[in-house]
Length: 252
Image 1 (cartoon, rainbow, N blue to C red):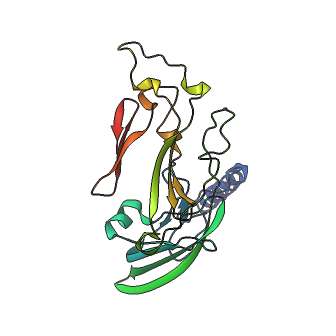
Image 2: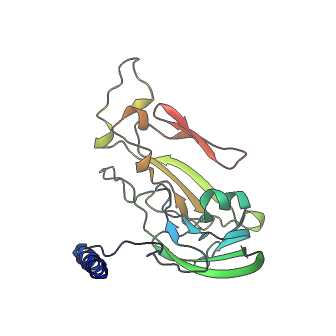
Image 3: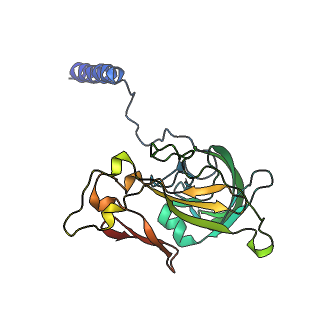
């Protein structure tokens, strides 16, 4: 009986070993994680919702945190973006939302928070280095387009005093493209589908730097009447969320 059990055990070990070696991706992950943790919380997810490449979430890593403050360290002579994060937003995003990074740049992000673990509270301040990619939007293919958002931007009069830390939301669009002129709207005649311009929605600081933009491909499609058209009528609601219309619907 003892001999039989030993043989079965040995066979199981050998078969298991050969099966594992045959898998190109390695062994089952089990309870461990295989992504990098750059700080004292969880992983950093850039563009977490696939529509805003200049944002990130520093995941909480399962810890309870509160009293959160985020600061985007500016470029030389640039504009600081600093804000407190309400506890409810920490729960919504599962971590610390980061807004206002520079494109095509390794941003320095400073975070302060209180970490609660086993009933003990610890005040922590740490710095993250987060690269945000260059701005990418669809090209119209027209000769007058020389950049994804604009040809150039110039600050004519520098903001000062209480206006020095302002952010400006710009709702713009570019020329019609070959992708967006295939749908014809005849019943009823005309309609908003004829205003089928690729959207440019972005945020500028007072130095003329882009600090946020909408990459619309997940929610916008020039080839379909339901999800095309001009994005317009932007309004910020009391809860901070934006409401606007495009195509055949309103969104928030």
